[in-house]
Length: 299
Image (tube, rainbow, N blue to C red):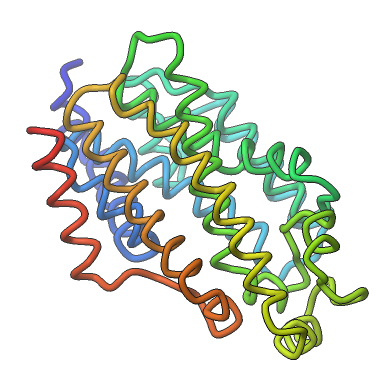
């Protein structure tokens, strides 16, 4: 199968791929700006991967009880293990087509599902090393799936793709501190919170936001600056992947990383933003990043 046939197969597959592209465009603005730089077959593939990841995340973030969520994750696990192109789920139909084209690592899908299950079972993180385990499952897995689509023969590429995924997830965690706390989740390591004076008992919930907002001046800023600097180190390492893939794929990875790094810099410049709502880059800024990435990295 050629790299153009992925988008022109059966009508069921074509419709499934269009469904995944619509989900990605609607739900993943940052991701979408990067993957638009790819050839059509690779674009379709990453949309299918994202749509599956979105469906798994929706299970974890949904309103069902924990037992039902875990049961639904088990169904998702079975679906990717079987990867049946005749599934009634258009996302699985699309993934089956992508998997035939790009030999996606199925263990990465399982890692993703295991990471979301960690959310459901209420895992917290005492240390940064513990948090990295979670990040590798929910985001490093996506990095490795993206790499399968990008293509690389360099043995170092897998680890770098995983590291870049962790870098993106660390930015998400910092960006979503308020939203996660209101949903009863805190991903920042407990050792970091103690180090920078996060008040005892302010683990999660609306009261946590109130307490932190009223805390000692500079406490939140010091925590954010610390987390941001560590996050930059992961970007520096993970972006080594860019030189190991073809030019269009490299431009895609560069655009995604720079968009997320832009969010990180906005947070670091004014840490209180994370208590006000989700921080993002303006649409025009994301467009400029994507164009610069394509021009800089070549076509």
